Length: 146
Image 1: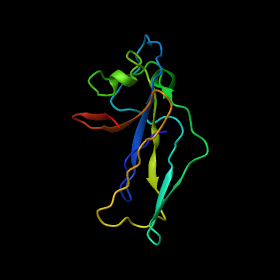
Image 2: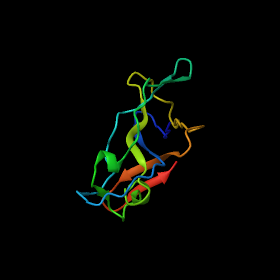
Image 3: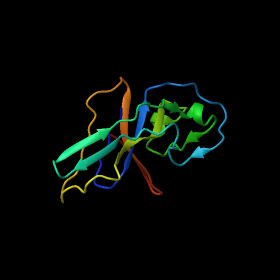
């Protein structure tokens, strides 16, 4: 399970990677400039109720499998200058990943009180499962373990 910071009305996706070493692909179809969206979406929904000050989380019943780039985009690779290269590129660790894990606020949630933020943290998880803050930018990218 992956967890990421939420603030009122804002969705921030978490990128999850699991240690899975795969064979190096011999041909390269494309050099990707960002981590692709892949796999099914897992978005637990969070809601806040101001009347009683409670927070609720609704979890999806199924969780899709993480997939390495070698399987989802055979032959493609990441740019070695990108911070996620060593973790996700098939020529490096080749970890399985998905950008479709994260959290979002329920549309019917009450507004959070001014100056309030919601923090969700990972308390436990499968061995080798990690969450990263990810953002692809023109000048540099963000790939920070959470």
